[in-house]
Length: 131
Image 1 (cartoon, rainbow, N blue to C red):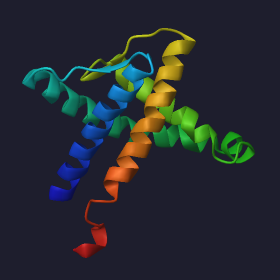
Image 2 (image 1 turned 120 degrees about the vertical axis):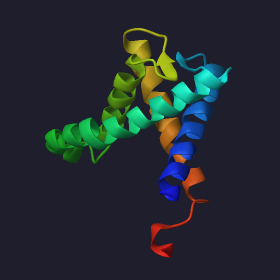
Image 3 (image 1 turned 180 degrees about the vertical axis):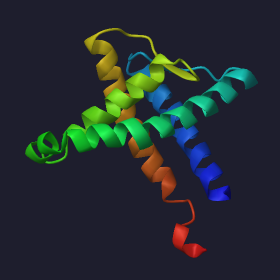
């Protein structure tokens, strides 16, 4: 249970860090953590993002297996961006302020950054096989 909470916090830190980078790139992915209420909303939003990745993301990846095979798996990056975009529409802790193609590009870059930062920070977490 402790490892799950730790991974949840690392994902929240990844989302926050991705918002800082996308803000520097002038993209519309924003996180509001200026108050305790905003930080709690971010944690709820990250939990919803994780749930959507585990359900909607997996379903979309199964449906698009042929397309993923053709693109050598790169289409999964598009699916990750779509799932982040869907989670951001709920505006729980993070949101995408752009519209149209610019919003998708913001979600795409943010999902790449979140995956990268989460992977780097995940190296420092204990393995599951240490139990």
